[in-house]
Image (cartoon, rainbow over all chains, first blue to last red; front, side, top):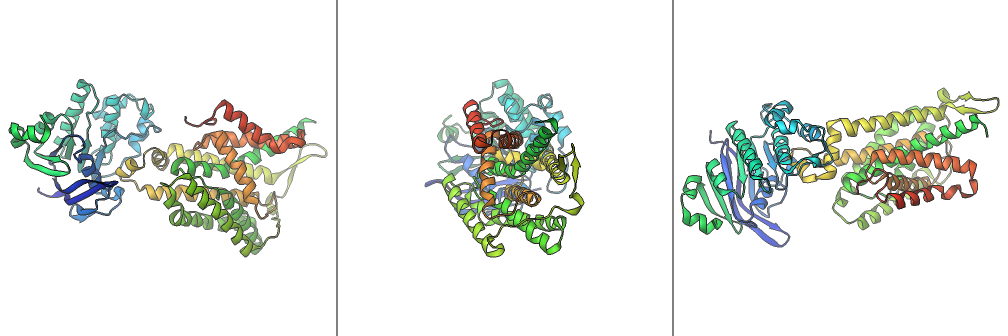
Length: 237
Length: 288
């Protein structure tokens, strides 16, 4: 059960000339939920992109299911069962809602077909009502659901959610959180980046905190949430 | 001017427009999806015509020549994308214009080395070498009707590919967010290679089927290139639907212009473009 889906070791990444990641280690095991936390600009998104092949780390290694994928193309990494819901959502505005979903459909790594169009529509009934709308005509919350639904269409083993509730009304955010819980319960590992630290820690087994591109905490989420001093020092709350 | 005459001009205009669509659809796709200004696109039209001519003189049959030439042009397209165009996607348009202008010179030089600088004619295939009589002294060639039909079929197939298939959805998605497409496990580089090769093959195919109607000449690509840019601009950059509308518009305007007002026929399409641009700067179907 302790099979590793994702292993990053000693990642150093740059954005132009700025050195963003300073030797970051990050591991996701099968079925696990991890909260990736840190204030703005601490390197969370860069870490995610470095692991997904969207940013090339200058040093360090990324292994997916034990296979070295440090220099692999982003699509090859995704095909190993990793789905990504980026900050700002990344729906295709020039495709209809239906097309956004269909174009992503794929069986999982072991040929699993747990998630298909019908199940996504069942899970997100609001999306089902707007299938023929253009992607850009959806509200923020609907766009977020579409992006999550689209990621599920790839039948991933790991779902990485970057700021999934950002800019959403509290009620909609609550709906997104309950969807994330459902996904977690279905056995898909999740990495969650969110400003709502309490919600992240309540949902995750482990938490990883980044400060200025370095891991300053990696451990039990309960341990972090119970420690006011750490919370204040690392996250400013 | 009687009805039969108008009908003939109408058919000629549509045929010319449909042929323009084949060439310009590739140009607008490559521009809309990969952001590449490809000045060498007209050269592919020329390559198609010369391939049709030389293979037809070898095999004695235009249809065979075309069947042999299509895979060659697909390979040419894929090779050029992998070797050259791939490196230009993230570059400024200036680099693209410089490289693709250079390619025009390379293609003309290669054409001169391989096929010489003479003007050639290609015979209309025997099977289609007939005319449909319209009046006592007016008739319409079957070959022109046939290529209009083929162009229409290809246009429909292209529409179906882009609007209705998953590959088409991936192609359109790639135009809006390249990273996201990749993160869904889709090989965007392969898709770009395919789109580029499709554009090359369509332009070359247009050159092949049009070879029996117009002579095969050096620099034949440049006139087509300019008209195709006019089509792309009028239709809206990146819009295949727009390319279709603009191609038909220009085909008809140029054809009728040549018979009705031959003195100013050469500038009609440019006047048309100017009017459209004043009215809709983003083109007929372009996005603002």
